[in-house]
Every structure is written in structure tokens, then in C-alpha cells.
Image (cartoon, rainbow, N blue to C red; front, top):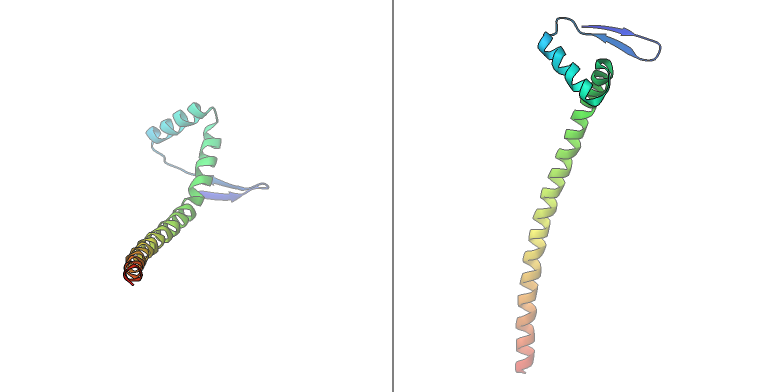
Length: 95
């Protein structure tokens, strides 16, 4: 792989690609109505942010897990308090 800097970006040249891969890329680009170069440019831009997106998703997944645990705990506390209040109400009514 060769990387050259140009005035507006970097040029990347990939050698020895399997023709089947190139045909598939061309087919995908045609379906989107864009050139092979534009398709690969967009794909690489998307690929470059993929790890960041996965990291953020993992962070939110862990946050959701923590929130679910806290909600379960809160639910337990509310149920316990409700039972206690019912018992207090019952005793007050007996007086």
C-alpha cells in the first residue's frame, strides 16, 4: 500500500486486489450511483469512525445496565416502604 499526500488529502493506492473484490465494490458503487473511488472514500470514512461508535455504544450499554440495576433496587425499596406504610396504617387504625 502506497500513501501519498496531495493538496486536498491523502492518496492511498492498494495493489493486488482480488478481481472478485473489485467487481463487488464496482457493483455496490453502481447501485449507489457513485464511482468506485467515491464508494471507497465513503466506506473508509465510515470505517475510520466505526471504533469510536462501537466504544460509545458499549459505554451506553454499560450505563443502561447500571440504570436497570438501580431501578430494580429502587423498586425493591419502594415495595418494602409500601409494605411498611401499610403495616403502620393498619396499626394506626387499630388504635
